[in-house]
Length: 319
Image 1 (cartoon, rainbow, N blue to C red):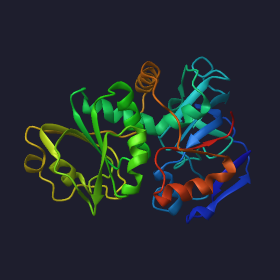
Image 2 (cartoon, one colour):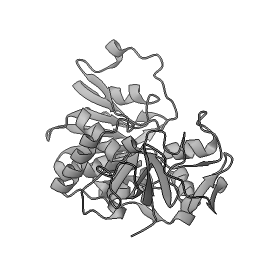
Image 3 (spheres, rainbow, N blue to C red):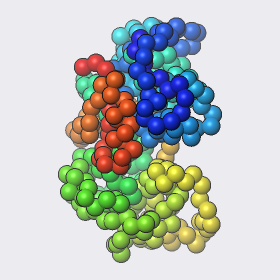
């Protein structure tokens, strides 16, 4: 099969398209024919060598959509069944989805019943799942004023599309370090855009809910912009800082407010089914930002790293 292999960490040029043996099925694992997958920042970290637990050579890819090709669980995962897989140790402890086939643990393969195209499913999988989990944890109401820190990220764009589909009149404000993206972000669904200048939001507006995608690096500044009893969901780590420093929950959280979080590794069939039902009920837009081919993964990594993109980048192997 063809696969994109990283033999040693480095710049996008280390992503090599080559012929490799197709994985052999083993007990408790099934083989998925990959139809498409998204490109994620965590894969960039791994490619650079910033994931200490990952050894090389490695086929990256933490998510995929496709069909069961060979199965060891024929009742739940029959051959030909449409499936989604994301997270776990895919693309890290074992080879991932940047390939024509991927061998996955059965417990990490989720069957789906949907008529959505492979393009839409590949766009939805990890990014919309993360946005949806965050949305649920924020307990949004139509009257809320909502802030999204790092609105132009894949999750930021997905969150806007989910919110706008369900609450068309809700005030949804996004932040960006590059105000040249403001018009494009409004097209995605944001009511207004504010500048994030050196880690400080250039606004005095107060919000009821906030989705923090930069992470611990800017959390205290995000909280500065929240009303009493506000809820903030810490989901992203785009600021490359993993831990809160000098944070006093009693003094730093808004009065009577809540801090919650969502992690896309918290995957289960029920939540995936809820996401698909939400997408269908509210006719959510699942259009990707760009579509690449398998031999264009280098280009996709370069674009994501450039910071010039808004929304989800996907790779499509099969219509």
